[in-house]
Amino acid sequence: MTTKGPSERTGANRGAWIAGGAVVAAIVVAAAIIIGLNVGGQPGVSAQPTLSSPASQSPEFTDSSSPNATATPTPRPAAPDLAWERLDGALPAEASVYGVMNVSGRWFATGQIGHAPAIWSSDDDVPRTWTTTTVNTQRAANENAVVAQIVPAGNNLVANGWWGLADSDQFARVDWISTDGGSTWDETRTQDPALRTVVEGGPGLIGAGWASGGTTPFDSFIATSSDGVSWARINPAGLVSSEVVDLAAIGDRLVAVGGVFVDGGINVAAWYSDDGGSTWTAGDTAGGAGTLNDVTQLGQGLVAVGGAGVPTAWTTDDGITWTAHPIRDAGFAMAVAAMESGGGVVLGNDGPQDIGPEHAWSSLDGVTWIDGGDMPPAQSRMLAAGSFGSAAVAGGACLGGVTCPTPLWLGTSRK
Image 1: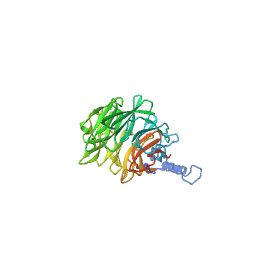
Image 2: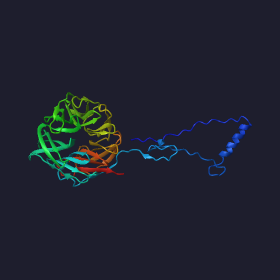
Image 3: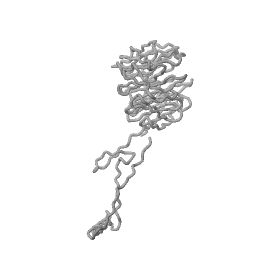
Image 4: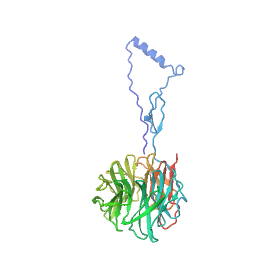
C-alpha cells in the first residue's frame, strides 16, 4: 500500500500595513518593541512560531483528542506480518492436509493418511499440538478417500469428502457426522458425485460439486441439505461447462468461484445467486487463464485467489464485479484466509509448478500485497488456510512420489 506523505502547510496571506499618521506610527513602534522580546526574556531575539502537527497530517497516526488535550496517537492498521513454522511431528507420516478450519473455537485439519480419510483437531488458540480423531470408514485397500472440510449442522458437525478407486479420477460423495464435537466420526457413503465445497446457508447447508465423468468439459451442480446427510441436487443452467471450486456469501447473495471451460482450456470465473442457489448468473472477472481456487470474506467484500502461473487476487464488494490485483509475477495462489485483526494472508507455491517452495503473502485490503517469504519447505502443494484469533494455519498435500516433512504450518504475528 502506498503511504501518502504529510499535507503541505500553507500560511494565510498577510496584508501590508500602511502608515497613515502619527497615531498609527506610534502603534507600529510599540508592536515592534513587543515582537523584539522573546518568550524566554532575552532581548533582541525574535520568537520562532511553533506549528502544531495535527494527526491528520501524519500518515502513521490518527488523532481523536480534543483541541485542549494531548493527542494519543493510534497506529494505523497494517497488513498481517506472520512468522511461519512447520509443525514437525504434529501429524502422522504420510499425512496430507486438504482443509483447515476453526469451528466454535476448535481447530480442525482434514485430509488423509496415505489413502485413508483423516481428521485432526486442536483445542489450543495457537495450535501447535494436534490429535488424530477417530474416523470410521468402509474404505477398501484399493480405494482412496479424502476429508475435505467440516461445517456445523445444528448440534452436530458434518465432514464432507470423496472416495473412489485409488487409480481413478472419478469420485463419489462421502459424509461423516460427529455428535461429540469432533472426536469421533461416522461415515455415510453414496454413489452421487462428490461435493467439492460446502457452506452454511439455505435450509442449513449449500454445497457445490462437479458432474464429471473423468473428462472435460463438465458441468457443476448445487446441492442443499438440512442435516448434512440427505442432499437435494440442483442443476443450474448458469453453471453448465464450469468447475465451481468454492462458495461464499456476501449479505444474502451466494457467490461461487472457479473456472469456465473455453476453447479447450479453462478461464477464471465467478457466479452469483440471489435465490438461494437455484439460479446463477456469471459475474465479471475480466477472464484470464486458470481458476479461482479459494474465496473468503475480507472487510465488507470478498477476496478470491488463483490464476495460472501468476498469483492474483480478485476483490469485489457486491459479488458481481471483480477487480484483479496481481500478487507477484510468478507462482501459484492456492488458499486465502482473513485475519481477525484485519487483512488477509494468501498461501501458495513460488515456482514454475504448484509444488514447493511453499510461500506466503499478506494484504490489508486485498489490493496491495506484501511478500511474506518462503515458508519452511515440505515439498507440498499448498491447498488450505484457516485463521482464528491471532493465529493462521496452512496445510498442503505431499505430491511427487517423495516422502515429505509434515505439511502443516502455523503462522503467528511477529509483533
